[in-house]
Image: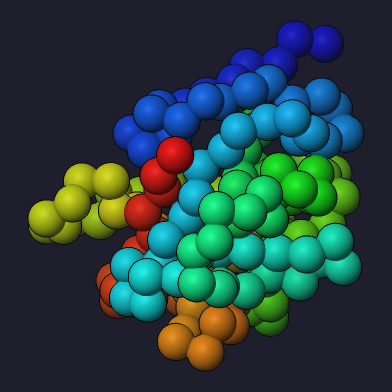
Length: 151
């Protein structure tokens, strides 16, 4: 089966994007780091599947590699996922629409590398708060839903 790999953001184009095997593992990969525009904190996760933000620390749990419209945590090999209730977490990659994310350029942004990440299945945007919680909400154009991806 032939699979297309699509680069969907200018920020991801600057990153080293590696093909992922069907299981979604991302060992030895170099990814991008997502900074929340409002908090300056980085998207992070753990092996239990929790997703949150922490001060940026350069660790592999804060690196994400792009798959087929997915974001895979470098340290865990798990995909960023969500549900209709607004929870965000990681699960083993399964190819489902709740694990697929569409980045949209934030109109009028002074930094063209700032994007929202919208879940394919729910249409909700990845969001966070100053306390480090990560979840999805209806897209509202607010700075807590804006993410900058850097290498």
